[in-house]
Length: 212
Image (cartoon, rainbow, N blue to C red; front, side, top):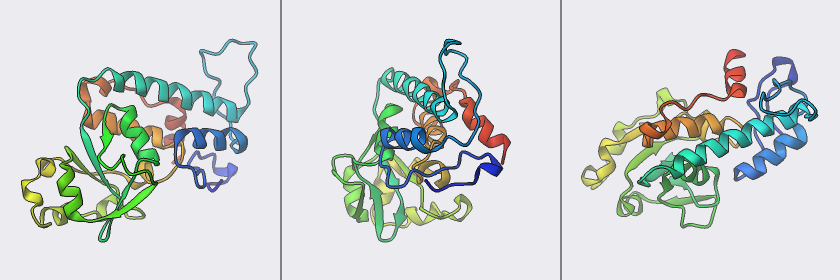
């Protein structure tokens, strides 16, 4: 596990080599015991839960609610996630971004590629005709991401997603950590606002924000 020390009481942890929520929750359950989280109110009082176990409970509850709302939607918009612009890198089907896309009732347009990430090109992306273009450039602050560069790509002006280009926070989408839940909530509100507009931030995320 890579992350901040217990002294600054942060949940900005990274589950090394994790590719999906199941691996992240396993890593959390095994090694995230130093931090204290409030006891989930819906647990019976006679159930003993460690700090790590509490976080896993919160993660599971948030994932379940995300899936319920995602399944209730009537459409499944196609998302192009861009990790790097040139050469183009995008997540494949074996990646947490494909998972959170499905959770909120959408789909990664490269989810048919059975790999964690793909090096592709602008023409291959254009041919897949996504509904949204989501720029989450790894290691780059959102203020430094330049959507206007996308508009200059050959033939991209004719894509239906050209009016739906969004800069996504790298910290919420590019790191395998519990903060992916926060990213998933934001994604849900973007692609299916009616289904997710009243989705509250889980308490463990609010705790993180209060410590920043």
